[in-house]
Length: 220
Image 1 (tube, rainbow, N blue to C red):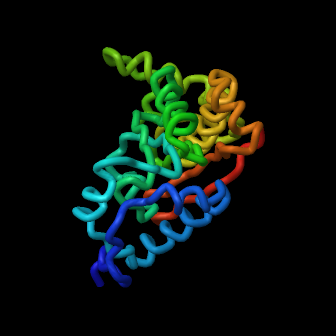
Image 2 (image 1 turned 90 degrees about the vertical axis):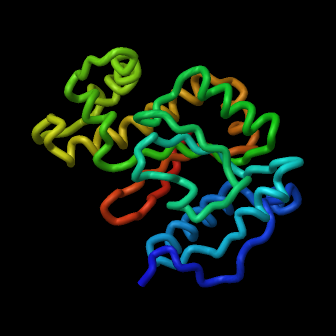
Image 3 (image 1 turned 60 degrees about the vertical axis):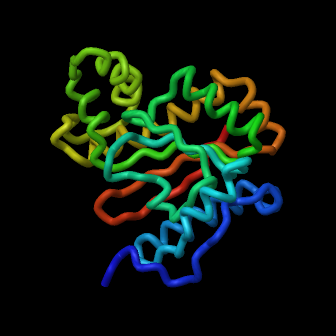
């Protein structure tokens, strides 16, 4: 069976502002869960990407902004069965937060109307392994340094090495939580929007072995 075989009529337009405005942050999380289920069942929604490109050319109305890892096995739009114009996607190794990422998220939410911020990590993350191993390599050294606090903060009684995938995944979860905390602490714009109930900031974890994306709320 072709895992990418669509089962529904092709979607022929990008997300509209009217449709986005009808959706709450919780609605968006549910739609993402449903999209991931379609991905795992090999029942992706049919899409006319050319039509989505054409209908979004004069304006975009993404409903969410995702912070994800650059890992080639974790393309969020495919994993959540999304199309052109559905979401903003910030990709950086280890899904770490910096000022440029925060500025991008502020643009997405305050100026463009996105209602959901998702920090999505994944299992067997190479950046997490690199941080655990104290890898030193050019500019990568500073990036991995942003993950060091997650390594130190992870409570784990077993072997704390990059060869222990359970520990790697535990650090990845801690890294998501700390990234969300950084977003709230370092962006008064996003924190204010969340406090006002205009956006929601949540975490997600993608399992590269099962294809499952698990969402969870992180209380502010």
